[in-house]
Image (tube, rainbow, N blue to C red):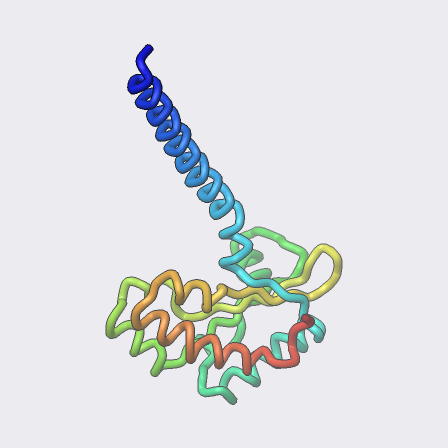
Length: 171
């Protein structure tokens, strides 16, 4: 085989190896993202207060920061399930909160995101007897959507939620 053909064959092998490496990299990145996303999208932290005290504190603090609790009070998931013949032991309450100005801003530019409104915080009892609060990771969500959603949800909403939750959650 001539020297030129050997060089051409070697270059081809290098290119093939490089393409395979890139493809493997993309697949591994996809697997990591797929497995990491659920834990990144929802933030869960242990509460410093008991179940009823946490819910009461949220219902009190939310209006103090210019938001409203949609429906006036937290939704008792256990009662809702029981109405439909399903008994569930550990307590779960959903606190749906809305800030009309933030909602209007987002709905003006991106009505399709209304399926994520109002913001919801879930207060729930773990099997370990501890009380937890779960919510969407608004900062990450905002970055993913960009534009006005990033401005409102990643700025004002995140800031307000941090203030509302201040002192309620363990680090």
